[in-house]
Image (cartoon, rainbow, N blue to C red; front, side, top):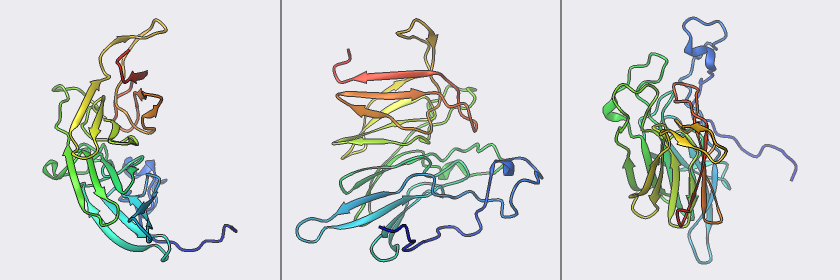
Length: 250
């Protein structure tokens, strides 16, 4: 009603960082120098429970691979924490989770080559899609994506940096390996996938291809899924392609 701050909660102290920190001895990098474990994704206010006493939970994804369930009516009290990713400067949750009722979909990036000299354990990486019960923090399923990038292909990675989009029964994700994947909401099974990196003749007569997907997620409307492919920043693969998928394939 007034804009007055009601409460605040800090997840990681001393985390000041900017792009200058990726360059050795750059004077524009703050003294803290990360680790850049911020909340890059918009938080989600979900309603859980049924009957006479439903309640709200504020869901926050973190770049260290964690998800927090907070009570928005109790000054941000921590209700639960779930760790589904390894995390790093290019790991954890990036641009957006999605929710279908009390089921929270958590995309994890977890790139092994972060481009800043960090040495990470590839065995701990969990790139792919994960589902969490928003009421309890219980992990419902995890689908870790295997690396299907051709050998030697630069800037190709199995993780999900882009925001994901949910609809009843499914969630859609654009991966850094150039694939669009649709996941079954109940099991996490991949329902279908399409490689956007292949050369294609577009409707306006140009030949082009996609690449890594990051930033904005798929749009779903009127039986169509709309995806933009190509993101030539931060060790991702460039491209220039807008794709529209339909239910009947026409």
